[in-house]
Length: 579
Image 1 (cartoon, rainbow, N blue to C red):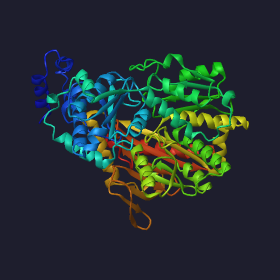
Image 2 (cartoon, helix red, strand yellow; image 1 turned 45 degrees about the horizontal axis):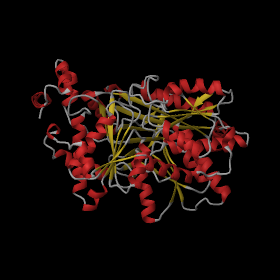
Image 3 (cartoon, rainbow, N blue to C red; image 1 turned 180 degrees about the horizontal axis):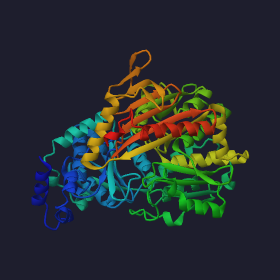
Image 4 (cartoon, helix red, strand yellow; image 1 turned 180 degrees about the vertical axis):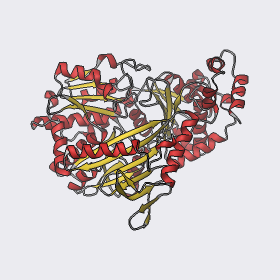
């Protein structure tokens, strides 16, 4: 159906009092907006569905939420009877309409006779992942758009292992969604009737307590007294304040100052431009608190508390924001150091990271005799590897991470977990402070030992239908006309994850990439640098990941700057002029 026909259909079908119809009527003259809102149906990306809220088949609203929920219900119903009984856990974050969308999903799924467990108030994403496993549910949903702007919301769907649905399950889900004639005709059950029948059950504190109990298992130095470590924490108006307070209290961290202005849930994220801990500006208030209290480390979580950002004091006693790559390196060093000291470092231990995450992680792991495995971007691929380890008894999972501030220590959760990361990096900070060292000193020590690894991610924002087409043209240009050199440095290897094939440009030899098919390209240069390019699975962006290694901090910074400049400003090779 053409997008104009879809607009007419929605106008004919929606009731006159429906807020979405009123919104549509106000914006009918905005042809570009109408086309973007209706030209396609919402599609699953790396982290589920994420979109601007509003009327339209390509927007998140009560009807597209019902459609996604119905697709999941039908997927469950086509499994065995046990899946229907085990049911679905649903959670939601602090965004506008998150609670309403969660209830609509619950009522839609419950109407199909599938058991639903709905959290009684907002919860972080890792609590949802934990709850699926703890309650032995068959699936999970959380309503969140992570760190996106306030106009966005989204749906993440989880399997029975507590991980986001893998590609095969998503493909099945899409098949069910394609069979749904119209999202506007989907019916939801009555909440009171569902509760009366027992198909809808509200959950809360018992699950929280079980999670905190599990959290205790990741402590490595239970004898350490963190009383002299001073921490500032901000939830950036998201879901983390309550669970982080409980976690720090349970693990003995009492000198924690919470940024009061950002502790309460707020879908407008009114004190920050972006609720993303990767954004240095998001730390402005935390830095003020840190200076006033002379705190050692500053911690910030995104709205659904799956990502953690950390700021530490440098040699000039100024707070600097660590990158996700740097944080992961510190956590790996602390974990492996402690396990070796305790004599319980497993010979089959394994670190799992993504293909765009720093190679410093591999260098540290190798120094301890620990293997590192790379996966595609997206934490569900890390979770898949954890399942493989369990199934085949092949490796002991130690740590999983991705450069975008996502970390996992204990596999009782199967998604990135900022609460775990917050208490674990605080434990590391306390341990090293007792030795007279800061986290910054630990990081510089790693660089001095293994080399100065430096990474940077750049994104080109291209919104709407035209933007999606531009991103596709960029990827096609890179794939069909790969650069022979970048910044005058020869490209020696091209990895095409869509073709699942790598090419040695020197010998012409090709090799299979043993990872799932994905629209990702990676170029490895003669000097050890690399560039990875991929469309974002959750945002209208084309993302570029740059990585270099230098003998000094200055040489690494210079090399990285030149590489980024060559890609974004050069008139040759890299196809950015298709924008």
